[in-house]
Image (cartoon, rainbow, N blue to C red; front, top):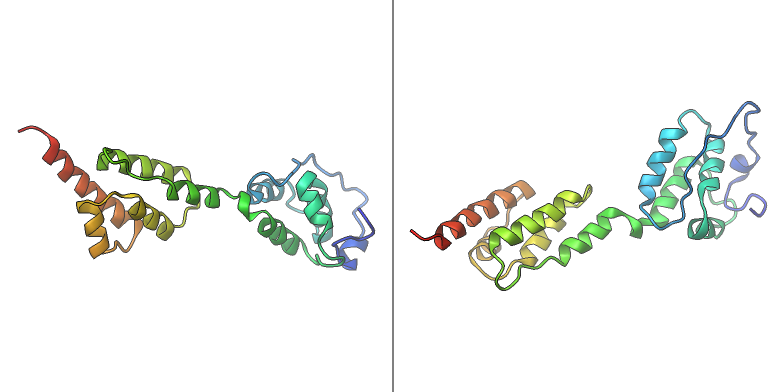
Length: 183
């Protein structure tokens, strides 16, 4: 690294404790969710001071993540929290939430697909995601529905919550099941 690169003088010049032994840390290359890397890092590094945490986190950056780091303005990073949030913001596109929002946006009810099959497919995909925003999931569910009784009901009276959407979809699935089963 060139000089103090993105670190402020306070971070760059802070002494590392003599008895400090850095633990083995996973490298972060910028291809995955940066929040997971930060969580793993913080679970390993709990009692270090600000400057030490900054240097250790920077040392985990490889490849695209390191290239991103060295392009930050000289003296820009003044605390561990600042570095952490810049890293997360810099690689936010790699987060699961964004990926799953896009996955959910692409789930469409097929022309001959039953409401039950579509709903089960959509809700299973939504359940895999840890951080899907409920209003975004609700919007994507409605968008993926083909025109029918449930889509009309959701258009007339939008559910106020994700559990309300699930409950309403369940009622319409039971209705569809009853209509399609022979008497």
